[in-house]
Length: 260
Image (cartoon, rainbow, N blue to C red; front, side, top):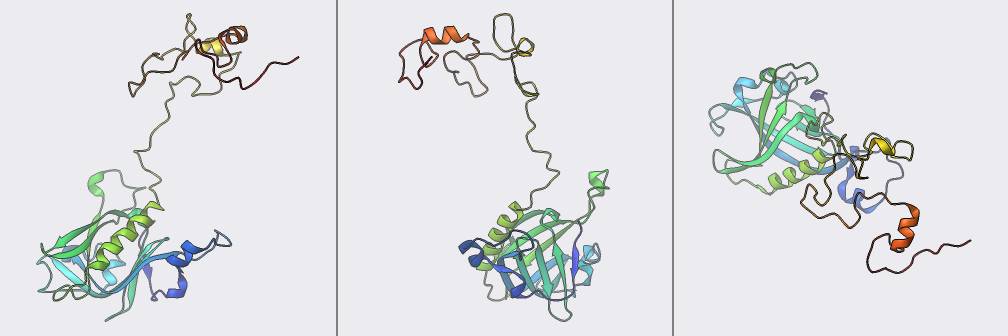
């Protein structure tokens, strides 16, 4: 999964408008057009000059150092952004036409920030490395890209920055990291975690006093009291003597009646 070159500019008809997507159910979920969540033009990218050649696709953008940028950055002007349900597209129209399609898992970080401490902007950290062949975190190549609003140096229209950020949040959630190590693992020690508890294997899970092995009754991980009868194994006759709800005490409404 790498950054992909986009040779021709995207078109509105290539996507399903968000409002249309929200108002109707698609006839099929396969082969349908990506949903367009945000689209803005006349943006500028600020990219560290020392890393412009880090990626073959990014290096195709026409850029130059600029007094309106931070000293370490070069500016890529006349950029259009398309935030879609499939990927994030950045396309430059002038002086040359070129673009890049960025899969959301490649965006390690995105956040709003103040460029040069005063301009509302959106910052992204792009992972340029193939994580399947990386053995050391020190070998991971990252590229910081800052998206600046139209007319950022004179009269910036910054509302687009928050809209782009919100759209990216939504679309990134549609593409969770398959290698997310934070996913919770099932508790293999819980009774029955490895399979069904039946009459044939019940003795494997119970202590001599009839309680489940490894479970402390009366306490839980949230320090909540378990209900009456928790962990007790009763015969059918015992349950009938105790009442229809199977618990000693006041009987509730009978929900079934033995017949025959």
